[in-house]
Image (cartoon, rainbow, N blue to C red):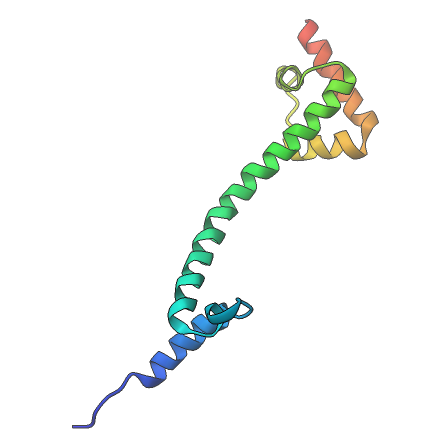
Length: 119
C-alpha cells in the first residue's frame, strides 16, 4: 500500500491563508502559524465591524440632523416627533443629506414638524 501524504491539500490550505495575509508585516505575512492567527483575528474584526459601521453611520446622521435643527430653533427629538405625527416617512440618512445639501427642503420639513407639534 502506498504512503499517502496530504501535501497538495496542505499546500493549498497554506497558500489560501498566506494569500489572505498578504501585506502583513514581518512573519505575520510569511509564516503560516502566525499568519493563520492574524487572519482569523482579522476576519473576526471584519465581521464585527460590519455591524458597528451601521451604528456609527446612524450616529453621524443624527448628529448632522441635530446640528441643523439647532440652527432652525428646534430640537432633534421634537423634529422626529413632529415628522412622525405628520406621518412623514423619511429615514435619517436622507434627512441628514437634506440638512446638508437641500437646506430649503429641510426648512420646509422643520416647518411641518413645528406645525404638527403646535396642533
